[in-house]
Length: 360
Ligand SMILES: N[C@@H](CCC(=O)N[C@@H](CS)C(=O)NCC(=O)O)C(=O)O
Image (cartoon, rainbow, N blue to C red; front, side, top):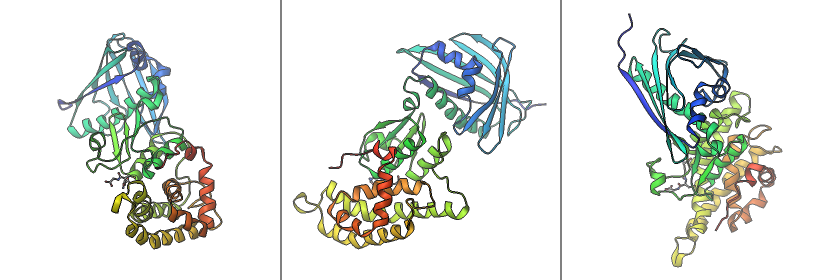
């Protein structure tokens, strides 16, 4: 005997596509194959007999080889207006005999479609909440598929294009080949604060999912999207080394090179609105120590860890670029030939070229 279920979730999405197209994406097998799984997974197999009483089955595959299979029966089909179908997992946290119900209501608005989803019948709040996160990700893929801008209609990077962290995120998206929209905004604006209580940029919005802190954003980009891995290095020590460099850059190198040097020129706060010499001069020995560490790490290689680009390089390249635009960088960088050579390699990458900022 199955306990009466009392938990449900509701979701609203606006999709810039005609109602018929949105509706058909739920009932057409080929369409379902291209969107109906969370980011980071693939639809491995799908069947859909879209008539009342007909069944559907979706096999979602994780990169680790895991399989998550959901299926059910169509209950009501009113094309382009309303669709109801049962939903059950063949394995996982919900018992296969527990059938939940999905109701999709579509309404036309401003040339697009308001989609309302009601998913009822969860046995507890935890199961409902885990489905909520999953559905948000699944509907992001639906949006990528139907929006005329593709993933740029779903994915937004909020931040000043001159910000080195912002550039790191944009380079990561470029490296993965993922289209996005840039919302160029400085830190602490209401739009930024709406997503990050600390007001810092960048913020990545993927539909209703928003993230801040660049390392976390890169992890999301790497796992959620197809395309080359941002950390292709093999082995525990290589992966730890990447994290070492990222941590050093975020906690110390950025402070010395950007905050205490570059930003003194970009946003001068010294006497007579000039760069604060004392702050810059005190930063120079710290900048030099960091450059020494990077010089040794590169050796004869062009990347910080191993023979390939990693997230560590995506963090460092925008900082070296900014530093090189100001007198202290111009004076210091020639002393570090490995850093210069590796940076020249980064400068040629299309991801670097595509994210070139205008520095003041
Ligand atoms: N730890 C943050 C640092 C982000 C950061 O410091 N961003 C700068 C712009 S490059 C910023 O928002 N500064 C404003 C502030 O610190 O209040 C991250 O990794 O994203």
